[in-house]
Amino acid sequence: MKGEKLLRMANISKRFGRVQALKGVDFEADYNEIVGLLGDNGAGKSTLIKILTGVFPPDTGEIYFEGTKVTFRSPRDAQRLGIEAVYQEATLVNVMGIARNFFLGREPTRWGFLLDKRRMNRECIEILSRIGVKIKSPRREVSLLSGGERQSICIGRALYFQAKLVVFDEPTAALSVKETEYVLRYIRSLKEKGLSVVVITHNIYHVYDLADRFVILDHGNKIGEFVKEEVSPQDIIDVIRAGSAAVIRGGGGGDT
Ligand SMILES: Nc1ncnc2c1ncn2[C@@H]1O[C@H](COP(=O)(O)OP(=O)(O)O)[C@@H](O)[C@H]1O
Ligand SMILES: [Mg+2]
Image (cartoon, rainbow, N blue to C red; front, side, top):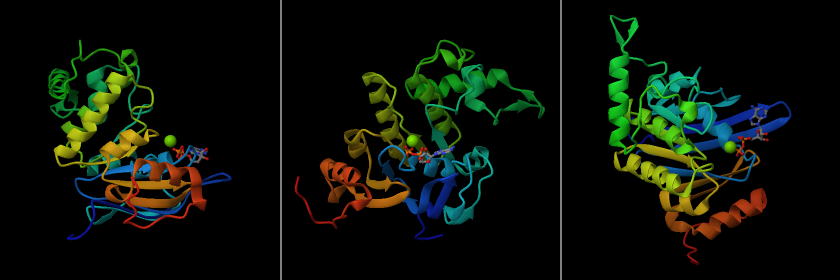
């Protein structure tokens, strides 16, 4: 559909017991755009992203992807449409090897039922080396990998399966300085390849550098939305600090 954003989430609410984690949030990501999703701990960022990646359904609200209304019953449904998640936790099965994790649930087969392990090993190594990751063996258990290496498997997977939108939840939280640089570079390269990215991070300077637009959540509400040109990193920090009491200024401020 013309004029439609790549992703539009409308009026998304989600409750966990007594906690109203999201309250009617609207969220969009355009084609070839990097959106930074920000907010203090407990703001609802991960919940929004888990709804977007099919981990659980929203209580209310709709998701439109490429102009079509979609519903996800599992992360597999979201992946099939081209939405891939890169988290520190949960996306990899520790006791399995790198190649098995790379293809998990989407394995190439021979005669429709035998895993084509040779092809899995070869293609996994090839795509990882293309993004600059050298692995000793595709059979190596992922529990032995560093946080950065684990994420690079997810990123390689997103490229291999031709994702349209890649979602990062705190990608650099547990990484060394060097690994952090790699991950930031990957995120940039996804945009250069024409993909869209949603990135959650506590590091305002990283996200300011990367993102085209920022969305700020607080206690389940969207309290701010800015394109980079209208805010400084300090403006964003101020909005997050002030929380929902914040007075959101319009564009044209420019006090940097
Ligand atoms: N699976 C869950 N069960 C119960 N409460 C949850 C669950 N996931 C998140 N919450 C609660 O929802 C709120 C928002 O959490 P979350 O989306 O993880 O915030 P953020 O990622 O912004 O730190 C928090 O109060 C959190 O404790
Ligand atoms: Mg979170």
